Length: 241
Image (cartoon, rainbow, N blue to C red; front, top):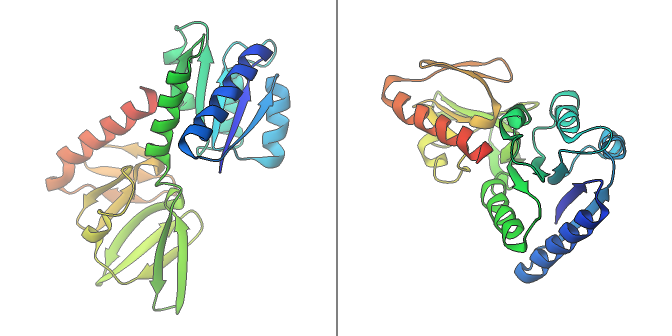
């Protein structure tokens, strides 16, 4: 099930987009649940309580609280980096001002079924695996774990063990770091023979170091620097194209 929100003060646009999303789900056998808001304030009140949507189609030119302020509320105040925000507008001159909100896409009205289909397909390609679970067995704890890839900050190897650093804990298990590169989503990057990181959690990056959102400083070894730089550029481009 994909939980989708639409926030636009034009009721006709909301109805049209809602129909397009249900049509996409029907044709491709994907369950979607669509909720609609006509003001930014009502959407923000919902998100304060329910907190998460998988996808949000958000009009920039709302009558009262505009879409940029709503995006700031989601990213900065709620600290929600998981919801894919897709801005919609009748104008095309907002794109660069939206960069801080990390939009997944930017659509120009009037909307077309083919455009919406392409966005949904790209969302499933980019986010589908991130929402999948990584499974491992910790011999030290005698316990199996299932952790969403999107909650894993990085993996590191130490003393022939792999340590998984998540949002709230660290889990150790047996394995080889390079073997993980074949199963992790495309937003993970090997920066060192001992570090496999989630680029979504990078807060600062230099030629030699990565600073993660949990404060960890990780070295980028010389053989990996060119590939890491290219992966970072590609990752940033995917966020705005």
